[in-house]
Length: 423
Image 1: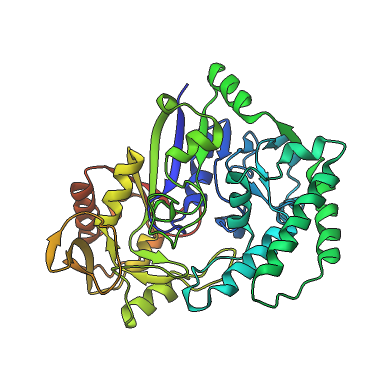
Image 2: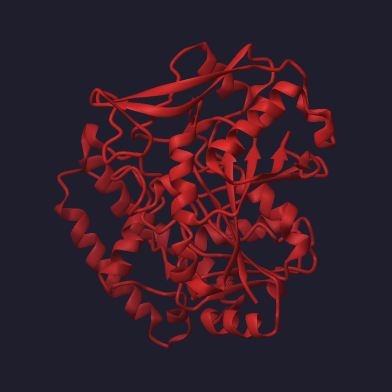
């Protein structure tokens, strides 16, 4: 049985959580395959807004199993907070959440290392969320990491202590004065670990293989976006994991020939959080209006998002490296009321016209080439069928499909799960 895949095609914040929630009724297992609690998936239904950080977005459906794969890094403190947020909805998460023993653990000292490293960069900061994700992945690739399965060992605290002591020595080497109370942080950490240990730890790759043999429907859920991929993103302003389709193979143990549908999620415009290049970024009233109407603030970090027109060159790049089979366009309603709407269809790069994503996207080297469309004034949020869409909006969608060569199958016209329309 093939494993379907859902991931973001921009710099994250595309609205993946909502689409996972909408699609979950068709799946038995939702499996998160990479990233950490710096990623926030927002879901809205029945007048309530939910923000998840690590727990897969299928948790609110009664019949779904939600697995956190080996490619994810888990902060017990944050995970405990997420579980507490679910308590008020009477969700039996102990039977619904599975944690991979091979997933790495974010220690309190990982977060301290993150803060020290970022502070030491001065103006060259990459915009880390300071959640300890980068240092945890560094320990993973450096073969020093602490994993979920280690909590089942009798001497896990000794292993923890050895790594934490090493981190403190590393922090002391930074020429930065970081004030912290590790004893206090550890008290919260150890309490959270005990809560985590009440959940089911599994050998996730074996679980996935058995589920496929039993013809279970599985959806792999990505975090962040393709342009933040450690290899194919706008390096060094990227995250620390593989956010592309390849990450589902390494983050869950799924064979490449077992990948089925690949749902690519993108906004009708473009946003970015933190530092890094952004060719179509708007610094005028149009960009400010997008941010205000779209409520463009991070679900977890609350940081304001930079806004700009849809970049079809970057979108095509993401579609190609992920093997996307169908597109889902989010936040279409935000563009209602603009007289003119632009999309980037090429770049002027060092005096030459190109139609691919180059090595460097720095502002001084690159200038977007736009195609302009007439806008639409109609409010999309009350529409329930694609037949109600304004003609100018349909032309916008049709052009995107033609340019990218992949169909737009889902159009979101508001934050609620009911505001999701098949196209």
